[in-house]
Length: 229
Image: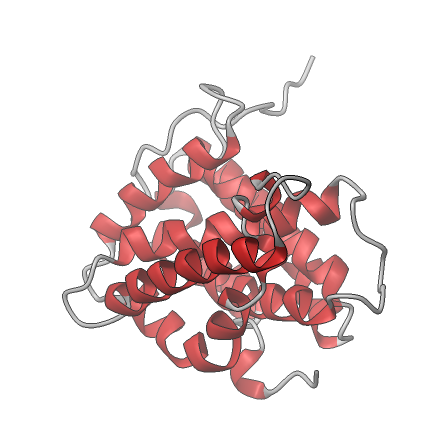
């Protein structure tokens, strides 16, 4: 899959420039979150442009994690769901929706058609039910998710719910890659990694820009702050 201009992430230099402009206005915790995020985004963008989608996905997720992580819980999905609830409330210009709408057809829709990143798919008892039953259960889930995400990306739709649905799929892919449960640059199921990387390459910089617009917003305490002794 070739990287088109529309799929390329926001220029890292632009984000760094905006960060420097807003640095003095940011709370110390937000300075830390965004400094960490931008450092990983720079590497993610480099790998994305080189079409190394495995590492691009991983580094984009690390950048994303820098923004939503708190010391309150190790449950990753619950943390990013709280984060999405906050950031979508602050997104008065609907920038998240505007960012995701153009990539629904080329990247989000194909991701929805990939059964292997549905957490429920792996919970089916494949030894006890037939393939046709598994296909039927997955197809019902796919249709429901597609309907929810499509509605969320429309004007006045529930973008928070749509984000949660998309990132729950990406989280399964994240687990496969980060925990070594997939082969690096393997030939099997490449499309899901490519599409996942494309989605993160658009969404994560968008989140960073939104956070820069709210320098005092409380996102919770960032884990592992630097300690000088």
